[in-house]
Length: 88
Image (tube, rainbow, N blue to C red; front, side):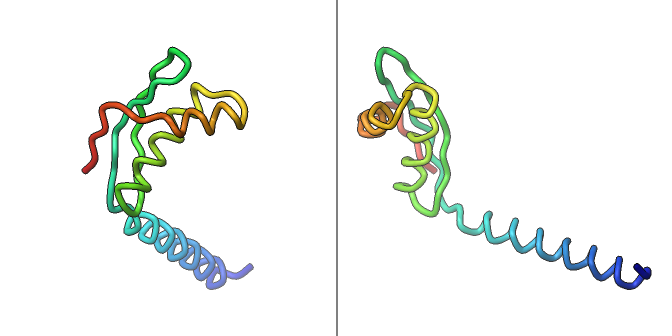
């Protein structure tokens, strides 16, 4: 490969990564911290999303992933009312 093609490839990769990072960061509009209690355990997590509802859901899914085993338990945990919710 000649030097020009290598530089063009590197420039294309940098532009692609920059676009991905910018696109990801611009879609995050809300961030929430919450705690969930399930089966005698309590987990607190942070989630982010395009709006407050998406951020809360992401935080609750993350907390439930640690405590629940299996699909049924995961659904039950995600339906629990969260405690200590703070969004920004």
